[in-house]
Length: 148
Image (cartoon, rainbow, N blue to C red):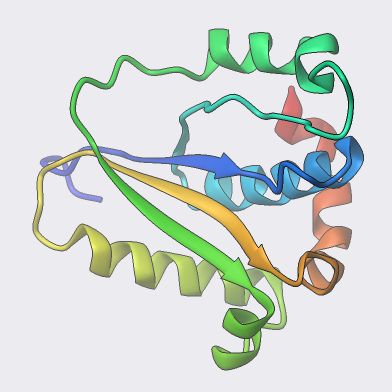
C-alpha cells in the first residue's frame, strides 16, 4: 500500500445456521487472516439463528466490536471473497501462509488502480468442516490476541 492508497478493510460473514462456537471459529480465522494482511476490521453484526436470542448480542461481542471496529466510511466498494474447499484445492492452499498469499493477490487485482476504499467480505461458501481443519492450529495460538 502506498501513501495515496486508502487502507483495505475487511468484514466477516459467518454461516448463520452454524452454532455459536462454529461461527466464533470462523470469525477468529478470518479476523486473524485480515489482520495478518494489515487490513482493518469493519464490523458487521454477527447473527446466531440456532437460538431464540442472538448469542453474539447476549455475550456482548456485537456491541464491543461495533464500538471499537466501525470506521466512519461514507463511500466504499464491497468485494466478496468466498473461501471454500474448492478454492483451497484449486489453488493448492495447504497452509495459512498460502491462504495469505492467495488473498493478497486476489485483493490486489480487485483493488486495481482505484482510489476507492475497499472492504473485503470473507465468507465460507461450502465445506466449512474441511475448510477449518488446516487453519485451526494457527488460530488457537493467536486467539486471545485477536479478540482483545
